[in-house]
Amino acid sequence: MIADGRRACGKIDIVEFDFEKDEDILPEYDFARGVRAKHHEAYNAGTRESVGMNAQLTPKLEHLINERLQSGAYKSATEVIEDAFEALSERENFQAIRAELDHADEQLERGDYAEYDENAIHELAERIKTRGRARLAEERDSSVR
Image 1 (cartoon, rainbow, N blue to C red):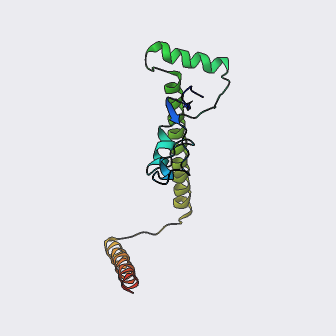
Image 2: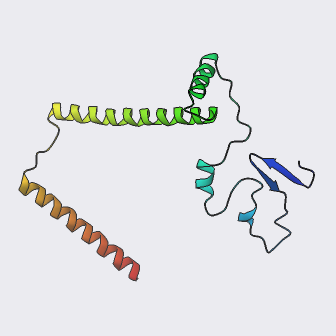
Image 3: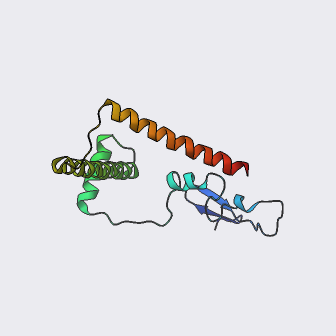
């Protein structure tokens, strides 16, 4: 707790305030327990530092992080870790796509597919348009009621 009644939270100070006593202040402006206003999900997902998270790094990880810092490519260990997790996410996405492609290859090998010529493609497009128009008409009719 800071001397004037505020408490430190990450990089900002949060002023303690009793919102239930002040009817002029909306609860979404009470930031004491994190952001809850209009853009709280985006804020919490990308810009809020986690308070109290601590991880013990292995000597190997410390060495790898220090190498990246010494190269000048990163300004902080946090940047190194964020970049590593982004690369991990990209790898996982690539693996998911690869699995889908492998599944498609298996379907092709089994002959589990349909061939379309130009006429069949036009017929398919017309069926899709017809279904879409019918759905739009239903939505318009239900919104008029």
